Length: 472
Ligand code: ADP
Image 1 (cartoon, rainbow, N blue to C red):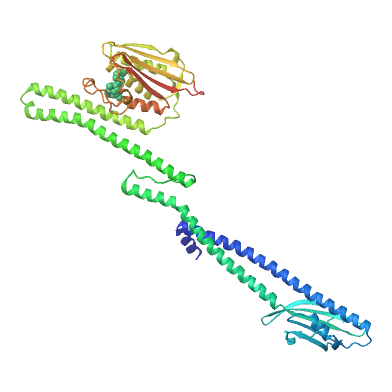
Image 2: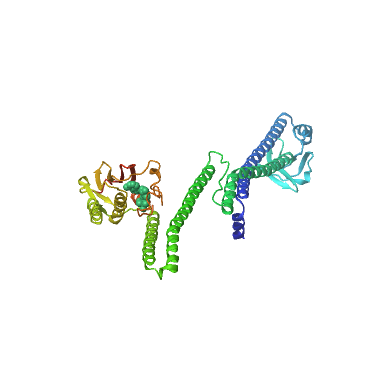
């Protein structure tokens, strides 16, 4: 049963949960408060009634004492007039003799059979219920010069009962009304509260149906729900941007791959048609095809590297290494490959500087930059490698005196597949991925990569990495 109830409550919409909660809470508070108030009032009223009956008794006692002192013989029956004046509505006064015999009974809207006569030696005050009536009884012994007996005073608490019943009803109706009103206002509040959540839910639904462009409209400023909607919109913006970037990347990659494949296809069909009989065509086409296959292999390899670098966002916990020897060795390797170039190194300030970077990654970054410097140098074959150590970071720059990059192209050279003036670069091998890969590597080590260039004067590529104070 309890499990069923929990299951039922759990499945209720938040709106109803809030309404039920508010109503239950108000009901609990209201009924506790009202009941306590009712008890206190009832107690107070009962005391009031008791006081009244005690005053009556005291007056009767005084009256009889006085009469017996003043007159020699005073028949009890003579006091009827006085008692009738004294008593209120719904009351009984009975005087009993020594043996409990009834000497006088005065009633006002009170049936004397409700209370059996009883003489007492000690006063007693109590309330009893007779059928539907609630009766307060006070018995007290009386001893005067002329008589010994008991005075009985009884009061039917009809007014009191009537009043307390009305009070109970008023409180009950008030309670029901309060629960009803709190339920309705809880529902209204919950509706108001749920509006932004419902809007968020419908946006999420439309994202599911229509795609990433949906956003939560009309965000009212202020509370946590508005912040949530704002956060959702920002998240969707980011998702959309990265989704578009991915799409662009796939488009660019397919485009780049298509060109060598088309050329390859052309050469192969040429070979198929003429190559078997003409050795010249055979040789030339094979050479060209091989070149395109190498190019394809290069693009695929670089694409794999780029995706790998991008997915390993931050490279932490790498053993700190001295970077100067790595830069030097990379420059030496380039020198062996391109003996016609002159590599001028000034990296002394890096002596003993240690960075948390993988040597393989640093080598890869340097190779990309040096390779570009070689590729895009024209007649001036001097390449300067300079390193400076600043307060919080190290900077390594590679400067060439080659063809440079036009100002208009500079902002895009780090984009994937971007090559300045493809016609200009046709003879120079390249995929347009090198700088994008290098920048991502540098970024992964919290570094910064910049490029400065002037057309026909030269290019300077600078990378800088922060030095951790505890390393060195
Ligand atoms: P690529 O494989 O074409 O060299 P990169 O991403 O390494 O691809 O470079 C992007 C483009 O930036 C190159 O195509 C080239 O036009 C330009 N570039 C890069 N480095 C230099 C440089 N040192 N001098 C002149 N142009 C450069």
